[in-house]
Structure formats: C-alpha cells, structure tokens
Length: 472
Ligand SMILES: *Cc1c(COP(=O)(O)O)cnc(C)c1O
Image (cartoon, rainbow, N blue to C red; front, side):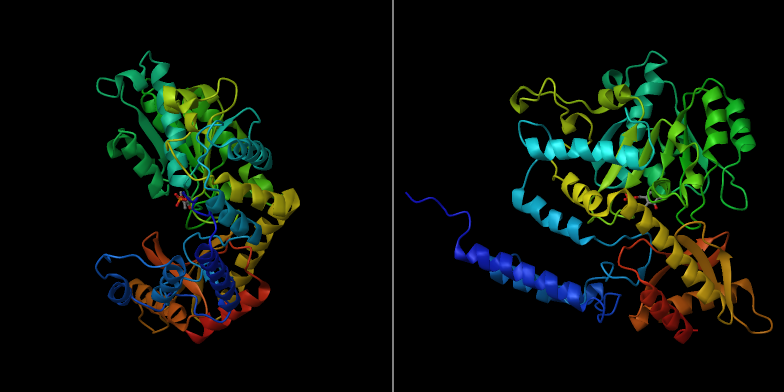
C-alpha cells in the first residue's frame, strides 16, 4: 500500500499553471477590454460539449478552463469597471482566498475547523468596531447581502412573533400574526426576496414613497405605523441607495420606529462602509441604533465574491433562528460555533479573505479606500458634466451617481433622451475602455456611475472620461 502523495508532480504542475494564469490575467487587465468580448452563444459553443467519459490531468483542466473562457470574463478586477456595485479584489484578500481553498476548512464549528472559527470571531469583532455598531451584537458571515438580509430578518421574525407569544421556529407561520415590512419604495430587490424566502410573502411589504433625494421621511413612516399599531412590524431602512447612494435619516426614523416597537433593519450593502470613513460618517448618524444590519464584503471591502455580513443587536433571536444541534457534530459548549448563526450548514472559510483585507488596510486604509472611491466618482461625474449633452440626474453623495445623455435635436423627447443614453452606454462598453451599466430612475433611462474598486486611479478616471467623450 502506498499513500497517495498530497502533492505529486501533476498536482504541483496544475497549481503552478493556475498561479501563472492568475498573474498573467492581472498583468493584462490594463490592456484587455473591460467588457467580456464573447457572447453566451460563443461560450456555449466552446464549453457545452458532452460530459467526457474519461478525465484528464489537472494541469490540462486548468489550461483548458482558461482557454475556453477566453473573452468570457468581465474585467471587474481592474480599475475601469463602473457597472452595478462591483468591488475589486485586494491582493491580500485574493491570496487569502487561494489559501482558503487550499486549506479547505469547514468552519461550522470549532471541532471541525478551529482556526477558521477563531478568525471569524475576530472578523466579527473588527467589523462591528469598524462600522461603529454595538460591540455585543451577534454576526454571521454569509454569501452576500442577500443572505445577510435573510439572516437578519429571520431574527426579526423570531423576535417579533415571540413577543406575541408565537414560537415561529416550533410552529411555523400558519396561524401566526401577520408581519409587515415597511420600507422606502427605492429599496433593493433583495429585501423582497428575503421576505419571500422567510414565508412572509411579497404582500407583507409596504413601500412608502421617498422624498426627492430618495430618503424616507419620518412623518411618512409615522403615518404608516400609526395606521396599524398592533401588527408586528419590521422597518427596513437604507444606507446607500443603489442608484443615488442616498441615506435614510436614521436617527429620526429610528426614533419613530421605536415608539411603535418595530424591529429596525438596515440595508447597508455598500453604504454602511461610509461609517468607516470620517469624511462620510455623518451620513450614517444614528444607524447604530437599529436592530440589525446587512452589508457586503465583496463590494466595498474588495474581498473576492461570496462574502456578506449580517449583524444583530440582540444575539438571542438570531441564535434562536439558526441554532443547530446534532450529536455527530460535537459542537462546543463554550465556543461560538458559526453554524449556530448562519443559514448554511457546511461552507467555505470566507472569513479568511475578510481578515486579510482588514489586516492589509487597517482602519486608516479602509477609510482611505472609501474616500478615494467617492473622489473618483465625483471626478467622473464632474468630468462628464462638462461634455455637451450630458445631464447629471443625481450628483454623488458617496460613490454612486446617475447621468444621462440628452438627444440635442430641437424637438427631442424623453424617449429620445432614453434612446441616446442607451446608445452611448452601448458604445462606451463596446470600446472596451470602461464599463458602465444603465438603470431607470424616476422614469428616465440613466447611466450609473459606480466606483467601488481599490484599483481605480485618477488615470482610470481620465481614460473612462475619454471613452465617454468618444462615444457621444
Ligand atoms: C448589492 C446590493 C444588495 C445585494 O447584495 P448581494 O451581495 O448581491 O447579495 C442589497 N442591497 C443593496 C443596496 C445593494 O447594493
């Protein structure tokens, strides 16, 4: 009997090839087109063969993967990707992500993955401190803000129903008092999906109109909450609207919501990071008074994808919603076992890249990252505003803004402006020089300007502006 070596020459060749391909990819990013050049159909042509009967060597697999995906990757690891809200990937976080896979830990509990569990605890503590949230809050590292909402709102559901004598974990929802979720009508779509997954149904959402700057006004919230004082209520507020970057006025809204015993949740997917930067912290004033907060690591912290954070002020309902016991797991009596706080059972040790990013940046580095992205957003918007036919629809509050390209014909209509905006976005993206995405805001087709990457520099901003100018 021979042991199978954990690293034979073929495994080593594959890992070296992956390293070489990664380094080449990162080196080429600056010259490569930002937008994926190949269509879905072209990629399918290359990739969609029959499942092979026989396998091949690891190094062949790695090479083939890179070959077959040629042209199929968007350059969001680079500095000129301004679409959606997509962060880059800090070198320390990327390296830690490689190690996460190499070490292959399953941080459900200390018995299974002690080191990874301790790293999670440290990340939780550091993140709470960095984001200015109450130190005793519980936390969970999940796949993204979508699952962070789900986690936080499961705790909310548990708590609100427990307060009415209903144990939802035991009895489920049929026959339970109906919950409502009250929010601004510019809320993100992931709130609705969380509500649906939690069995509350889309119909339990009350969308309130927001003001001209996209903020929910206290008197509007108060009027809705007064309408029904009995219903168990979640109020979902927003730190950073996905189109405009707007922040709800937390202090005043939370004061209102408290009077009605509502659970206050905050969607801070990217905007909560403003709290980590002295220049922008005022936008989040009062946010620490909420009951739960959801944010992302893979956006503004620039860790690789698959990373969001849920925080809950009172750990008890969070624990009740997710705690998990099974004899074979040998969970610890004293330690914090992550499986008790997350919707997943087995999962990757996604705390490692977060730990690496926080270590690499420090408090000052995070503040600087936030500040620079906001500065680049302003430079992009001011630069674009100076071009003929460009209208700024929403000036940046933080790192998001909206512009549109007006049709300058004498009798041009809104529909013409919409068409021109779409054409210009398509031309910019086709140039490969920068990538922007569109949205519809207040009925207007707009181009979103969104800067969340540590990679973006002033030179990238200038290059993107030249691409915009050439596409008009
Ligand atoms: C991106 C985003 C989400 C969803 O986050 P995921 O990480 O994609 O799950 C929720 N809310 C806002 C405001 C966002 O920008």
